[in-house]
Image (cartoon, rainbow, N blue to C red; front, top):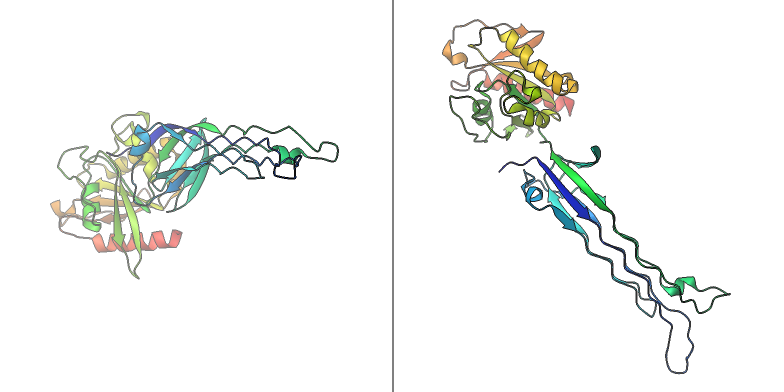
Length: 322
């Protein structure tokens, strides 16, 4: 199951209390204070894992708690620090608190400490002074941070496919990469985003993302696209897929572009390309070189026409912008 949002509560560990102790041994009946400090409470830490592709674990486990620090001991022994609570998340995860972004994870192994453990309290040895040689003061450990977090996953991809339902996005990603999305001749076959890796020249590659088709009014919640537009916000370029049987390709392009603009105008600052799909329906048809000032690439995923040229263009654009 693909889950790209989750709300969780995290509790960092409490610091251990300092120790009240005095040194005692044979022939030293009145030794000085030797109470050690308490250990620090554990942090709540998120760790990027390239093998994860969904927030499903965090969707169903709502609370995460780190261990408390141990109290200090006599003989100036510091208490053991509490163990961190480490939570694996997919790359592209954003963390929000009260609606504000407080962190994100973009690479494998990257760590983000979302909640800090409480500091351990000082033992009475810390309070010794020339005027107070036998202090009975010590500190209790401090509480760890408690936070309510919203996790949001934005897939990391280089090329984003945008188009109406049944425009041929899933078929294209299946022939350009090893991805195997569900393909059928009815709208909204794609219900979740799909990622595929496309091999380039010079042993390079790029990641391509297919999101569910958009319809007019998607930015207001119509159709499925509004849930997934965010997954193309981080891409280097956009491919607008338009079925060649569209009576007015320019209008179709304007509608798609308009939905993205209403969602986030910055998306349209990326390099764009219009891909006319299903040209095998009429191989002799004449196609425009540009629509709305944007270059047009006619292709057929069935007959494999134009795919190498399209892949080469994407490779050059992605490598140039990375």
